[in-house]
Image (cartoon, rainbow, N blue to C red; front, side):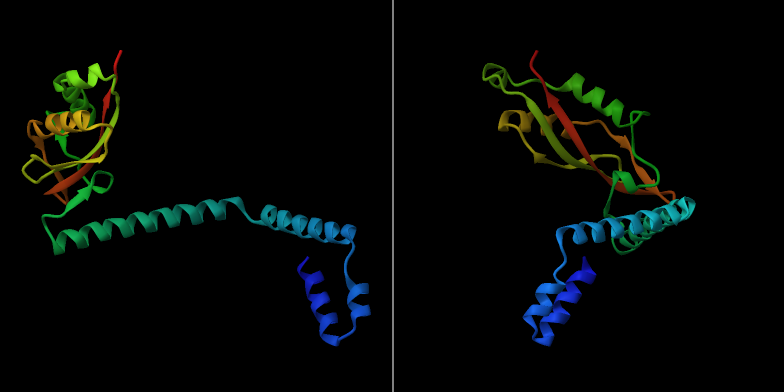
Length: 188
Protein backbone atom coordinates (compact mmCIF):
# COMPACT_ATOMS: atom_id res chain seq x y z
CA UNK A 1 0.00 0.00 0.00
CA UNK A 2 2.91 2.34 0.61
CA UNK A 3 3.92 2.02 -3.05
CA UNK A 4 0.37 2.87 -4.13
CA UNK A 5 0.31 5.99 -1.98
CA UNK A 6 3.61 7.16 -3.41
CA UNK A 7 2.33 6.61 -6.93
CA UNK A 8 -0.70 8.77 -6.25
CA UNK A 9 1.42 11.59 -4.83
CA UNK A 10 3.71 11.40 -7.81
CA UNK A 11 0.81 11.72 -10.23
CA UNK A 12 -0.70 14.57 -8.25
CA UNK A 13 2.53 16.52 -8.44
CA UNK A 14 2.54 16.33 -12.23
CA UNK A 15 -0.73 18.24 -12.20
CA UNK A 16 -2.58 15.62 -14.20
CA UNK A 17 -5.91 14.76 -12.56
CA UNK A 18 -6.58 12.18 -15.23
CA UNK A 19 -3.26 10.44 -14.50
CA UNK A 20 -3.99 10.43 -10.78
CA UNK A 21 -7.45 8.94 -11.37
CA UNK A 22 -6.00 6.27 -13.62
CA UNK A 23 -3.23 5.49 -11.12
CA UNK A 24 -5.63 4.93 -8.17
CA UNK A 25 -5.45 1.25 -7.28
CA UNK A 26 -8.56 -0.85 -7.28
CA UNK A 27 -9.74 -2.57 -4.12
CA UNK A 28 -8.43 -5.89 -5.49
CA UNK A 29 -5.00 -4.36 -6.10
CA UNK A 30 -4.90 -2.89 -2.61
CA UNK A 31 -5.83 -6.27 -1.05
CA UNK A 32 -3.23 -8.02 -3.21
CA UNK A 33 -0.53 -5.51 -2.14
CA UNK A 34 -1.47 -5.90 1.53
CA UNK A 35 -1.38 -9.69 1.23
CA UNK A 36 2.02 -9.53 -0.47
CA UNK A 37 3.39 -7.31 2.34
CA UNK A 38 1.93 -9.69 4.93
CA UNK A 39 3.46 -12.74 3.20
CA UNK A 40 6.85 -11.00 2.98
CA UNK A 41 6.69 -10.20 6.70
CA UNK A 42 5.76 -13.80 7.57
CA UNK A 43 8.61 -15.14 5.43
CA UNK A 44 11.07 -12.78 7.11
CA UNK A 45 9.92 -13.92 10.55
CA UNK A 46 10.13 -17.58 9.55
CA UNK A 47 13.58 -17.04 8.07
CA UNK A 48 14.91 -15.51 11.28
CA UNK A 49 16.59 -18.06 13.52
CA UNK A 50 14.47 -18.67 16.59
CA UNK A 51 17.51 -19.19 18.85
CA UNK A 52 18.86 -15.75 17.96
CA UNK A 53 15.65 -14.16 19.21
CA UNK A 54 15.77 -16.18 22.44
CA UNK A 55 19.42 -15.31 22.98
CA UNK A 56 18.66 -11.62 22.40
CA UNK A 57 15.82 -11.77 24.93
CA UNK A 58 18.03 -13.53 27.49
CA UNK A 59 20.82 -11.00 26.96
CA UNK A 60 18.38 -8.13 27.30
CA UNK A 61 16.98 -9.65 30.51
CA UNK A 62 20.48 -10.14 31.91
CA UNK A 63 21.44 -6.58 30.97
CA UNK A 64 18.33 -5.19 32.66
CA UNK A 65 18.97 -7.27 35.78
CA UNK A 66 22.59 -6.06 35.88
CA UNK A 67 21.41 -2.48 35.43
CA UNK A 68 18.94 -2.84 38.32
CA UNK A 69 21.64 -4.36 40.53
CA UNK A 70 24.01 -1.50 39.70
CA UNK A 71 21.23 0.98 40.44
CA UNK A 72 20.64 -0.62 43.86
CA UNK A 73 24.37 -0.55 44.62
CA UNK A 74 24.66 3.09 43.56
CA UNK A 75 21.62 4.06 45.64
CA UNK A 76 23.09 2.36 48.72
CA UNK A 77 26.42 4.13 48.23
CA UNK A 78 24.69 7.50 48.12
CA UNK A 79 22.25 6.72 50.94
CA UNK A 80 23.06 3.66 53.09
CA UNK A 81 19.65 4.00 54.80
CA UNK A 82 17.67 3.78 51.55
CA UNK A 83 15.07 1.01 51.42
CA UNK A 84 15.38 -1.51 48.61
CA UNK A 85 12.30 -3.08 46.99
CA UNK A 86 11.76 -6.65 48.17
CA UNK A 87 12.17 -8.03 44.66
CA UNK A 88 15.64 -6.54 44.22
CA UNK A 89 17.35 -7.29 47.53
CA UNK A 90 20.00 -9.99 47.49
CA UNK A 91 19.05 -11.60 50.81
CA UNK A 92 15.42 -11.16 51.84
CA UNK A 93 14.40 -10.37 55.42
CA UNK A 94 13.07 -13.34 57.37
CA UNK A 95 10.21 -13.36 59.85
CA UNK A 96 10.71 -15.59 62.90
CA UNK A 97 13.01 -17.84 60.89
CA UNK A 98 10.55 -18.08 58.00
CA UNK A 99 9.46 -15.80 55.20
CA UNK A 100 6.62 -13.48 54.22
CA UNK A 101 4.20 -16.44 54.33
CA UNK A 102 4.98 -16.90 58.02
CA UNK A 103 4.34 -13.19 58.48
CA UNK A 104 0.96 -13.59 56.76
CA UNK A 105 0.07 -16.35 59.21
CA UNK A 106 1.12 -14.15 62.13
CA UNK A 107 -1.02 -11.27 60.81
CA UNK A 108 -4.04 -13.57 60.42
CA UNK A 109 -3.61 -14.83 63.99
CA UNK A 110 -3.39 -11.29 65.39
CA UNK A 111 -5.93 -9.41 63.32
CA UNK A 112 -9.11 -8.33 65.09
CA UNK A 113 -11.97 -7.74 62.70
CA UNK A 114 -13.55 -4.48 63.90
CA UNK A 115 -17.06 -5.11 65.23
CA UNK A 116 -18.39 -1.99 63.54
CA UNK A 117 -17.10 -3.32 60.18
CA UNK A 118 -18.82 -6.65 60.86
CA UNK A 119 -22.06 -4.84 61.73
CA UNK A 120 -21.85 -2.83 58.49
CA UNK A 121 -20.87 -5.91 56.43
CA UNK A 122 -17.59 -4.29 55.29
CA UNK A 123 -14.92 -6.54 53.78
CA UNK A 124 -12.08 -6.23 51.30
CA UNK A 125 -8.34 -6.14 50.74
CA UNK A 126 -6.18 -3.42 52.29
CA UNK A 127 -2.85 -2.99 50.49
CA UNK A 128 -0.08 -1.79 52.79
CA UNK A 129 3.50 -0.78 52.24
CA UNK A 130 6.08 -1.02 54.99
CA UNK A 131 9.81 -1.18 55.50
CA UNK A 132 11.82 -3.75 57.43
CA UNK A 133 14.74 -1.58 58.53
CA UNK A 134 18.37 -2.59 59.11
CA UNK A 135 17.53 -3.55 62.70
CA UNK A 136 14.65 -5.79 61.57
CA UNK A 137 11.92 -3.45 62.79
CA UNK A 138 8.76 -2.83 60.79
CA UNK A 139 8.55 0.91 60.08
CA UNK A 140 6.71 3.40 57.86
CA UNK A 141 3.51 1.36 57.54
CA UNK A 142 1.12 3.12 55.18
CA UNK A 143 -2.02 2.29 53.27
CA UNK A 144 -1.55 2.19 49.50
CA UNK A 145 -5.12 1.14 48.77
CA UNK A 146 -7.71 1.11 51.49
CA UNK A 147 -11.17 -0.32 51.88
CA UNK A 148 -12.65 1.54 54.81
CA UNK A 149 -11.09 3.51 57.66
CA UNK A 150 -11.98 0.77 60.17
CA UNK A 151 -10.25 -1.98 58.18
CA UNK A 152 -7.36 0.25 57.10
CA UNK A 153 -6.58 1.21 60.71
CA UNK A 154 -6.72 -2.40 61.91
CA UNK A 155 -4.38 -3.54 59.15
CA UNK A 156 -1.89 -0.78 60.00
CA UNK A 157 -2.17 -1.59 63.73
CA UNK A 158 -1.40 -5.28 63.31
CA UNK A 159 1.47 -4.88 60.85
CA UNK A 160 2.97 -2.10 62.99
CA UNK A 161 2.91 -4.46 65.99
CA UNK A 162 5.04 -7.04 64.20
CA UNK A 163 7.85 -8.69 66.14
CA UNK A 164 11.36 -8.04 64.83
CA UNK A 165 12.48 -9.63 61.62
CA UNK A 166 15.98 -10.67 60.65
CA UNK A 167 17.08 -7.83 58.35
CA UNK A 168 17.73 -8.31 54.67
CA UNK A 169 21.19 -7.75 53.26
CA UNK A 170 23.00 -6.65 50.14
CA UNK A 171 26.60 -7.85 49.74
CA UNK A 172 26.50 -9.05 53.34
CA UNK A 173 25.54 -5.63 54.70
CA UNK A 174 22.13 -5.20 56.41
CA UNK A 175 19.75 -3.01 54.39
CA UNK A 176 16.21 -1.70 54.75
CA UNK A 177 13.70 -3.50 52.52
CA UNK A 178 10.30 -2.28 51.28
CA UNK A 179 7.34 -4.62 51.18
CA UNK A 180 3.91 -4.30 49.63
CA UNK A 181 1.54 -6.49 51.60
CA UNK A 182 -2.18 -7.30 51.33
CA UNK A 183 -4.36 -7.75 54.42
CA UNK A 184 -7.62 -9.44 53.48
CA UNK A 185 -10.74 -8.94 55.58
CA UNK A 186 -13.38 -11.54 54.69
CA UNK A 187 -16.71 -12.12 56.38
CA UNK A 188 -18.00 -15.69 56.42
